[in-house]
Image (cartoon, rainbow, N blue to C red; front, top):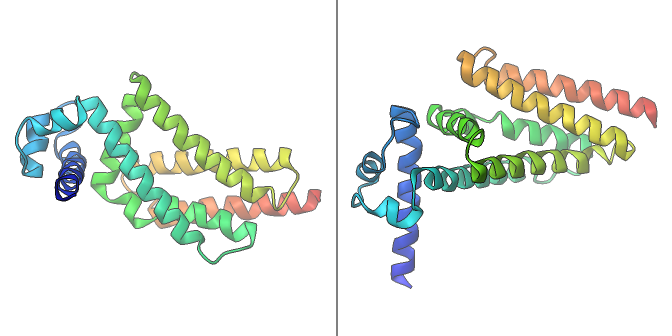
Length: 197
C-alpha cells in the first residue's frame, strides 16, 4: 500500500514539474531530464512512468482538466437555476487558477500538440465535448434543445476565444474583463431564449 502511494506521489510531482518546465523553457525545449530534475526524481523515472514527453504532456493535461472540472463543480455547488449554472461554468473557465502563467503555458502547449498528436487531439475533443455538453444541459432548462445547442456552442466558442486572446495578448482583456464579456453574452443569450419560449 505504501509503495502505491509513493508511485502516485512521484507521478504527481513529475506532472507538476512538467507544468513549470514547459513554462520556463517552452514545450519544444523542455526535456525529460529537466522535468526529472525539477521533480527531484531520477532521470529515467518520467520515461518509466509516462513513456514519452508527448504522453507526459497528455497526463499533465488530464490533471489540468480534472482541476478545471473540480473548480467548475465548486462554482456550481448549491446553484439550481440553469442561468446561474451556466454563469458558474463561465466563471470557472476564467478563474485565477486557470490564469496562473504556468497553467497558461501548459494549455498553449496542449493546443499546439493537438494539431499533430492524435492522442492529444482526442483529449482536446473530450474537453470541448464535455464543455458543450454541460452547457447544453443547462441551456436546455431555458429553451428548446436546438436553441440550447446553439447557445452552448456560441458560449463555448467565446470562452475558448477569449481565453486564447488573453493568453496570447498578455492580459488584454484581463481575466475579469473576459469573464464580464462572456457573462454579458450569456445574459443576451438567455434573454433571446426566453423570448422564444
